[in-house]
Length: 96
Image (spheres, rainbow, N blue to C red):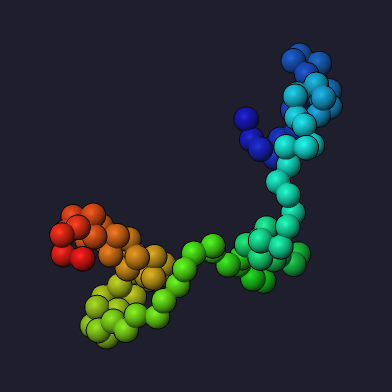
């Protein structure tokens, strides 16, 4: 079932209330500062700002030829570098 599709009562075609489907509004996430900081800001469906991921970041200088190889495959190159580093760490825990 699609998350955007309204839930309907079996064979009736009418939309069910939150009480009928067992949804409790108290189960909704708390909209605190962290929630808003991590949220995407959209205007008329266009992404304006992507939320900040809750993680520690560092600037690490990398050789230009290494970065060029990852960039050559297009968007998402930073994530591919992160995945490659994680894979290497998993395979070589004694080298850290």
